[in-house]
Figure (tube, rainbow, N blue to C red):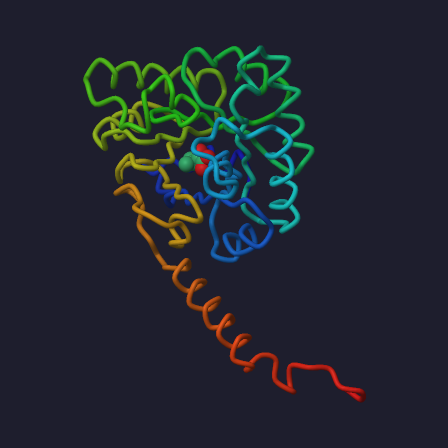
Length: 267
Ligand code: KIV
């Protein structure tokens, strides 16, 4: 999968919807690739899903690079996109290009960053350095403090219009696609129809050019309630707990290991 191919996958042109899933390690990326996803996103959701933080703001460029390297060792056919974490592209274009290069050298083929018109200069600098950029609008988790929590965005006509302006600015700046997160479906549909690059939705309804979910959410690996846009395709947390309980009782009751599971003098 390539950036130009994703760029061309507007649904109106007869293209299949884009399928993107997050992955943070080699086995996860290998599973997503075996399933045939188009894009593996090494998201900064890493901070919450894998590293146990309350938000994504704690994730560093070194942590991202570490996980991008693990994902890229799976040699996925899917496009590998990596999130630029908070504060790695806010201090100027030079800093952003240097940080994005770290992710590219770790194995990313493109980077994703959050925000609208105020990111135009940085996006142009990245594109100028031959680093493809995916935008991210709506409920942008790196803005959690400014938004006052993980809240659906663009519910009011003025905010929806602003979001549309942001999307057009990101397209003009050179983004090859845009994630739309946590916005009403009608707003996502209007934005999708108003730009020439694909939108990839998460909690943004059915009319986007593609959909993305977090690996651990869709496989049911996380405890507690999920937002309503998450469809759980498996309950792997329960599968894991049941298997681990069986291991605990087999060890405690002397059923593991058996003679067949042990090495002997001759075999
Ligand atoms: O970090 C992430 O996983 C993301 C997706 C939710 C789009 O940005």
